Amino acid sequence: MRIEYMVVKVRLTQFAVATVLTLAAFAVTAQDELRDTFFKEADAARAAAEAANAELLAPRNYQRGVDEYQDAEEALRRGRNIETVRSNAGDAANYFSIATEKATLAQTALAQVLKSRQDAANAKAPQLSPEVWQEAQRKFGDAIRLLERGDLKGSKRRDVEATSLY
Image (cartoon, rainbow, N blue to C red; front, side, top):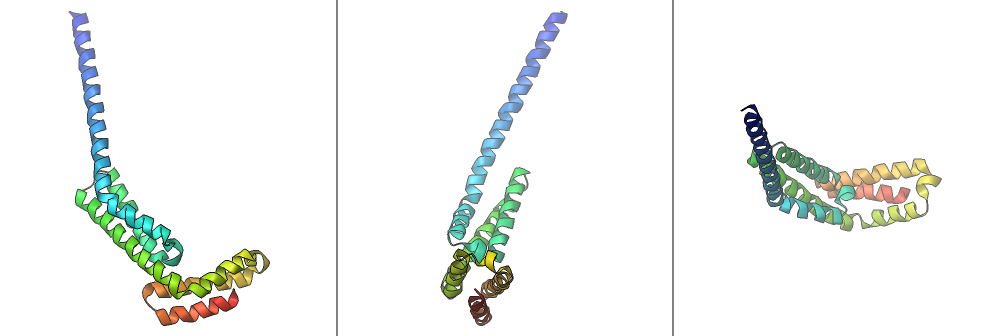
């Protein structure tokens, strides 16, 4: 009788473990499907932003996109409300799209300073004249930030200042 009780107990334990593992596998699969659904647009927008060099040329919007993306991933991982995940992923896609637009604008509006910056980097300016390089980088960063906010006139002023320093 005792042996039968042990056999039944072992089989129930095995069944419980198998059930838990099956449910866990289903949850992971469902989470992967949800991720694919909610992050598809954000992934595409992020790839476009990275291709446009938005991390450098539109840092504020790009970082906001990254933050929303990470919030969406964390919400999904923790099993939060699906609407929260959808909202965060949608916001991430919007920020990445804006960053792509701003970066594309910066490539055109700041073409001269971008070329001067690259030429100076190729000439080893950061090592040969670090103080001037840092000042030029500050002016360049100011030009980027002003352009990202929509201040073309202020951005062009910083663009000229940075170009003369590079």
